[in-house]
Image 1 (cartoon, rainbow, N blue to C red):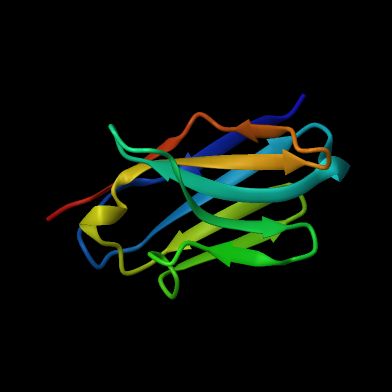
Image 2: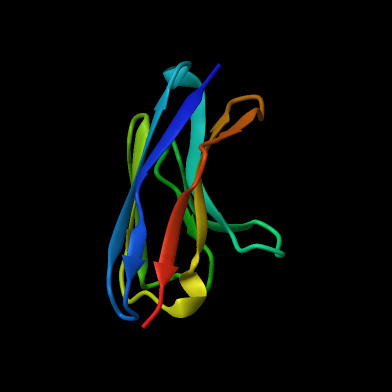
Length: 114
């Protein structure tokens, strides 16, 4: 079993910055991918960014150049700069194990408004 816990998030004005952090525990050596999804009520969950154990990072086009994902073993952080109102969502950290099992955290609210 894998536990995923997010921290960070909150409210910020457009153009501001926030940082999300995530810690995963259990089966550490099987954590192939770590990343972040986000979801707005009434819409499908979408990929924000993810990184493999080998360091290959993928970003959604909408956040490229503004968000930076980093990973250190079983922890990951998402630095979000130049935030826009459309970035408002619940952000979920996830872990994908070798073999494909995927675990999510409970989510962290990010609100960008003036």
